[in-house]
Length: 114
Length: 113
Image (tube, rainbow over the protein chains, first blue to last red):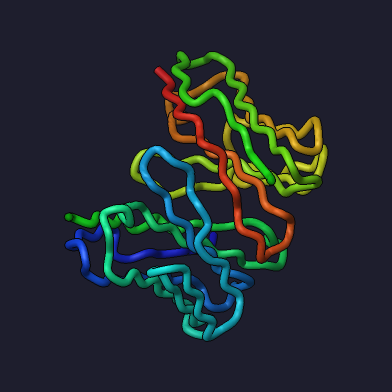
């Protein structure tokens, strides 16, 4: 069983703050790392798919980095807005016989207060 | 463009009753299809995974089953529901490569009473 851990479990920030959270995964089992945003009453939406060590991806005010050797990825949000409030999920594709299957972390619940 | 439809949105069923949740994808062919469940206070757990018609991989032992009678149709079933089957069920598809993101349906909230 793959262990994908996300921290913190929840986070409250003020509008305009920048924030970041972590996804940890077994470095020995890696093919791709996904990030999703899950807003209340909506379905999860893909943010990034990352495959290369040292990879950095950016989408507007949200960016992510990947370290496959030590088994972690960071998600950063610059200048948080209330509409950024959501659960942020990371998911590991371990490849091999697990190719195509994603193991999700528990998520980080972000609340941005106006 | 591709779309995914999942129904019903909510369902309340008594213990021991059968279950059928349906998911269809439009605008793509030969997608990978998935059923995930989020139980209360827990993350998304992969239940079933399919790479083609009639090809189903079960990830966890349970009293649920899945079928893929057509390329873009994925059905989650149970003959007799348990209380522990309550949760939020999500269907998803991907393009079939390890780098392809999942595209999720709107989910079904199942309450077993």
